[in-house]
Each structure stands twice: as C-alpha cells, then as structure tokens.
Length: 385
Image (cartoon, rainbow, N blue to C red; front, side):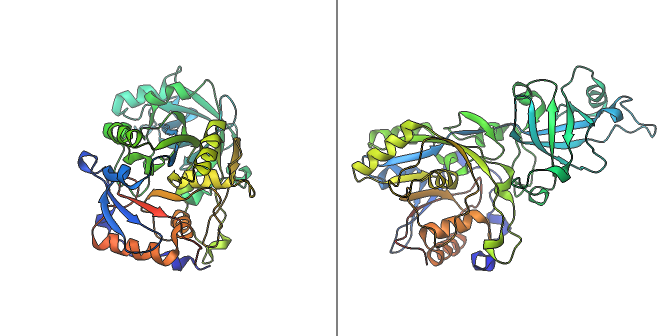
C-alpha cells in the first residue's frame, strides 16, 4: 500500500492558523454515493435523525509544553559569559505514576540519567527569568531514563523533534501546569499559543485532562448547536482517548503497512456501550466525532456483537483501506495532512478515491484545513476500494 497514494496538493494559505471567525466552520458532506454537499457546521442537526448517537471524545488538552533549565546550569543564574542559562523545551506525553511522566525534551544533547531540571514560567524574561531559573522552590524533575531506553511503543523523536525521557517530579505537576505550561499547538500552526487558544483549542466536551493535542472534530460544537441537537432527538455519549504527540508523527516508509503506529490510552464507560447498543436496537446510526473516537470504538469492538467492550485499554490500531468497521456508521472529522495515518483512516472509512476527490474539491472551494479548519461528515462506504 503506497503512501504516495494518499497524497494531495494543498496551498499553504489554506492551513488555518486561527478558528473561523464567529465559529462559522463549513461542512463538506460526503454521502456513500452521489455528489458532495457544501453546508455549514451549524446545520448538522438537520443532517441527522432522531435517535442517532453522537460519540465524542472528552479528553482535555493539558498545558503540557514547559520551559526548564538544568539545575547545575541554573545555580549561578547567569553564565560566565553573562548570558542566562539555556532552556530546554519539555513536552509531557504520558503520566506513568503519581509524579512520574514520560516527556519529550529538546534539545536533549548532554542530558543524562540523574540530571535535574527546574521549571521556569513560559513568560519569564530578563531578570525575571534569571530569578526563576535559580528559585529553590520551583518544581524540579529528576531524569531517570535516557532516551536509548525508551519503550518501543512510544512515538519516535522524529515525530515532534525531541527525545523521550522519564521524569520524576518532586511534586504533583498537574495543578501547576496553568502557571508553568502552555498549550502545545500542532507544528503546522506557525505561531506561539496565546490566550485565545486557551479556550479555542479545547472542545466543549473537554473533561478529562491528559491530551497533548485536541480531538479537533469536537472544536466545531458549541452550546447552541448542542441545544439544537438535543431538541432534534440526537443522543450523545463520551469516550476518552488522550491524544499524544504521535498523532503528528509522519509516515516515512514508502509502504504504509511498514509504518509503526503510536499507542494511546482510552476509556469507554459502560453507559456509552449501552447507548451504542440502544442505537443498534433502534436501527439508528452511530456517529463518531473524530478519528480518535473511531480508533477507540473499533479497537475495543467485539467481532460478534459489533459493540465495544467497556473499560480502559490502549491501542496502536492502524486503520487503512480494507479494514472492516464494526461500530461506526458515520464520521465527523477535520481535513487531515497529506500522506498521514489520519487521512488513511478516513479513506478506509469512505473510500480512497471519493475522499481524495472531495479533498481536491475542498481545495478548489478554499476550505480551511487541519486543526482550526473546516469539517467533513462522511458516510461509511459499503466496502473499501
């Protein structure tokens, strides 16, 4: 399966850097057959039937991007050359134990097991930075695993430009992320995160902290639309999948099937399984709000009942054309990067040629792409090409 078969041409000007003004996202509707329709996301309730079930991801993006200095560099907050100590960028990836995290660091040169990092606030500059770098009461972390020892299932350092380490913090770091952290925007958003992103890059469903990237299909929903969906008799139920940095990992192999998929953890409530079973009993459709929901439900699906198993787990499921979907009937999703695993999933769901033709039409009509871009509503194809 050639990765080149999932390529398309995208002008850089169509990569959305901010949400659409006034929440006015567009919606490309791709039925199982026939021509695409071009609507607005606010019209979603008119496209669903009473009793349909929306399954959404309630993960919350953490302010997981941190600044740190090596403690032995920070002891004299200013070096002999009169310059402040160099900072490292820390991206929290996964909580392993109470105060132990897997994290991606860059630059990682000369950082070894046993070293200690001290956090500095993201906006500290000049003398404020020097004071923060030397502050004895600031949170610190001890590096306990070198990158050569990282677990094989973790995302490679090539995915986000860093290397994975295990960090043991001197305290619970989660309550301190608002002070020391910033939101880790995707690499194709070519600006620093700001106050607008604090709300714009969280979905209305966000409840469970743990993600380092937003489940972006959920960004299109607001309170007004949820009210309309409820009045229309559309039900909804949550799952949790904490999106990791591996979601941006490029496919470097020429053959897609040689790609090693990243692993992410998920949780499916028993009430959500009952809601899916109820939709099946009513012969209504299960609509996944985003590719993370698809991966969660399909990874946990029972082959016979076509229902997901409740509870927690982790998945490295790589969905490509030819995959037989068991749970999801329709998919709401943003437009994805060329040659990416997410685009392959969408092609598996709705048919490669139909999806790529729809992408080409979206480019011609100047839809906005990627995390802050517009959305699609796709019907599942009868079979993958």
